[in-house]
Image (tube, rainbow, N blue to C red; front, side):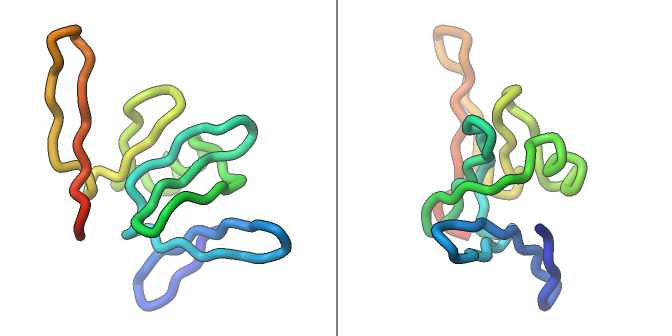
Length: 96
């Protein structure tokens, strides 16, 4: 669920009868986790029911698919480094 408040975009996570709002600006990445999507953000982690495809369509200018099961917020990526084995290491900025 997406809501607008003071020009901030929010996602909603439901848990044990409660609802948690997560500011899009605090999110580092989304990762597929069974039938849910794990959201990693500044204060921790949460599960949401949105699919990666729906998030990618809703935020095309903010998210980058780096794997079939992962999206990152480009604003939080601080660097990429190619490793000797050919893989790529992605670095996030830890502070806004």
